[in-house]
Image (cartoon, rainbow, N blue to C red):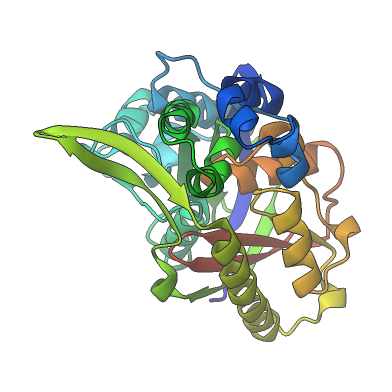
Length: 349
């Protein structure tokens, strides 16, 4: 995939307000830890995550996405009438239908001919949305589009901790540990064709993207509902972390080679990389397999955990705000999601 007239003009975000430490979560698992003599601090030791953020219990997902979208509009000065598409891409959503994007679009005041819909692709949702909007722009269908997302880990972590205590086995501990890394936040990505008169000098050109998949591994990480009684369902999440890391790294390596070939780049041409944020072990394995110097990467998982679709774009926004990403840098977004799918984007910052 190659693009010639697609630009990212804003990466706006909103972090959930409540800070939850790994120590707090482990304290709730004290009976399990005592049973298996697991030392406190193991969660941080295994993942590198010290804390994450959660929304309040009464938070509505689309509210977070609306705040992020309004930030993107305010900082660029784009008019609602110029937005040709609003796409919501979170794993979490307000309800099955209508599309969560509808409430967001209504609050933003976009026109009736605006395309409004949801996209779901695990942790790759925002990147999938970016490419969907990019295709519309490249084809000349629209001049601008918003990709929005909001993720919440509070409920699934609470449910998982209850399940771990109800079924205190090492097998359940192992398949539940990854869920405890979940964080929460919202993001909005504004893409345009570069023709609008915006109040920003941010004009990050999307050069191209590569995508590979390994759908035979669709059972390695699953989040959904299970029936626990007549017309009674309970949320669950389980992860085969060892296999997911092994197969994910293999797919990432293949995608990286495909990406570099498509862009006619070598590793030295890539100045900075922004990765999906999972944890320390995953980050190290991926960067090593791809022969990427860790100094080229900007991590946020230590304080934000894994925010699903929101992690990569929020990390990119923070890297820009803190001066890590510089104008003219060749930047690669390296995303991977359960399924397995892997997507990599190339940008001229």
